[in-house]
Image (cartoon, rainbow, N blue to C red; front, side, top):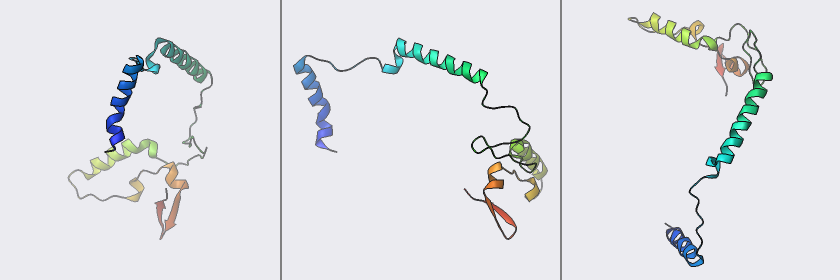
Length: 124
């Protein structure tokens, strides 16, 4: 451990004592009433603006918010919980065998994949 780090709190304490000044605050800047009021006003303004300008328009397709790429019928990631439950129920009491047609297909896997020997591999 660095000797300066060991002694610096003591040095600061002694300087404060010598100068008769205390440089600590019992309250963090973000917890002051004025800051809380300002944050609440800003949150209200943002909430009001978002309610008037909805960034997530209602559409019937799966679309990437980032790129705007639209997925086709093969994209089924929104059904992942149902697909998983269905696969588990079919495995109960049997030897498990995963079928490609039962896998979850994401929008990223369609647009960021390469085919090797007729097998599609997602590239990150």
